[in-house]
Image (cartoon, rainbow, N blue to C red):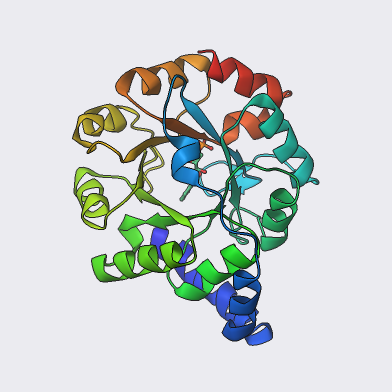
Length: 257
Ligand SMILES: O=C(O)c1ccccc1NCC(=O)[C@H](O)[C@H](O)COP(=O)(O)O
């Protein structure tokens, strides 16, 4: 699954690169306002933080929501109290786009994450050129040297990498890569089963100063509470927000969990 998603994302990036060469995207990236500080935005303080996701569809759930106006949805997320917004830009299975990312960037003043299957620098330049402050790096789909190189490249552009693990071994590789924001995704990408207990198992192993993000398996306030009690600084929520009637109220409810 991950291999196919990465392959597709790289093919799509190659198609875009044929139209907009690297030097031009680099020029656009370097002309952006500086990236917002995602580590500061997600560090715990009193309350858990919500990273609210703009997600139209997914391999595990198919079509979730139309989202004709991602900027309007992002504004509702921000009004609800989200600390950051994740925008799925993968085109084939998640039906996202860089246009979605640009629209969201221009509508909110909190950090924005490009959620994509990233395997090369060009995709990171595109993210910065579209105004993203964060990128996703999935440990399972990157060899260690490439993971470290891409993280370093994002940081050179002033961005923060959300490094995502699905197993204890990947978690350790994320730490070895110097993750400042390290996510544990409850979704098993082979079976699509949820394993929220994985975050609780790994939470004590986060070094001080690394932002702890619990990803997926949040549908109700009690699921936020479970992650918060296990020590999460932030939770990443998609489906519950895009399928509910009132995302602003849902975020408020989750923050009070
Ligand atoms: O969501 C999927 O089906 C999926 C499949 C393969 C790779 C990644 C996938 N999802 C990305 C995510 O991690 C989630 O969008 C994110 O954690 C939010 O999850 P949820 O709240 O369960 O929508």
